[in-house]
Length: 418
Length: 146
Image (cartoon, rainbow over all chains, first blue to last red; front, side, top):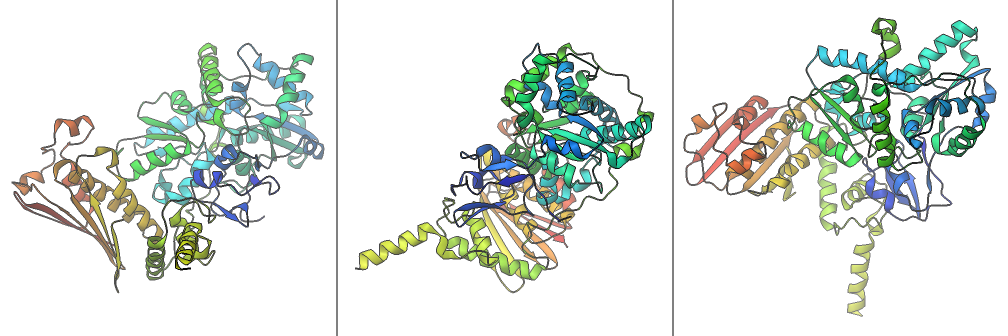
């Protein structure tokens, strides 16, 4: 498999080369080249910020279609917890989950229940060591740390996501109870965001995900609401208690673990600001950090259909009327099901050079060029900032004559002299 | 960055730090941290430098009449010099004691002034020197060995 695969993708026909997406990218992963946005693979963390801001809908998320179900003999849907926030209060969520049986899936699993298992497991891990533990629930944040906050890699909680735990439990159960071979079973995440789709395809912390593919919530939504009116409930699928529902919104993990010494942050810019604070030692006694690229947490994922504040509010209401918790026996869930088994490596992409002396020389060159630039970060050259532009010049990826402001100045001078 | 000089050994960065504007405290330390990250310097070392420069920046903003932070990065070490324009410290030995603080109420309300700044800087650095002339200046010199 290729080293990089991203769900976030660009439809060149729709892109008109405007600079909206450049600004918000937290890893400066976008450049406009020949009038079209281009994503730098090794920098992209699939946070979906560009997707949200693109006024022409040129950015999309690669996901699977329902056709993929035909490839397997037995299929399971794992709807994201944020799906529960996409229906107004009064909808029977168990019936919503039952619609998946009519979409072609043979079974459905409530990921909220897997989140509850993880709440208890993670709490145990956190209580064992009072150092800072950083949640890996949002894969975009984990990738952000790999690129920009490598000194915090050791603080990452090396646990799987509810999606992965659910997939492992279901695969095992179906193989045992229904006698299917592993390759005959297709398990699909019904995703709220591109980062989850990417992490099912190219996971962090494990070699291969147990999830076979992902379908986007927004692509299935109209089918679900139509089926909802037509079908009868066949099965009891919904198991979530208040603890499970809460994983759909920011602060939910900490709530479900019942811990106090935590900080919950949503929105990629705010996450960056708080991680900066952590690096500077401003939060020395913090025990748990949960950060989400999207505003509101997973309910803010770009593949949801509902406004993130509305959906977050529904999750809050759902959790108020739900039972407090399920009785989970942690010994039923061995380490192999819950924990990561691979080392988390940092990425070198932000470094100028692995050789210190060469890096210094490059930095000096960048600085010299940067001083000549207008520093208004207009983006017309195709780079997000004048500094990123100077870096690109030194890396040989562009030339200074792409600076529109400098060119204008030059033209004005020539005109004056004529 | 207020100045950037390269010489044969490495680079010298100089940043002016103002006083009394708490909302921008941390900006200079952040910039220094990002430079170090680009230079492929060990993460644990970056962490120590970040914490120390942040504490220094807070001190300049709260206690001084403004000053500057100068970072010298060479192949084997990182040197940080912080010099302010006064008012200076009467008793540097007392200032180094954990918990000792002369911070204003305004600073304390923001969570500063716990008296841990200087001891923290000493703990993070490999060499630490403080020099002050009351009524004139305070100068800190820290060295971090790579």
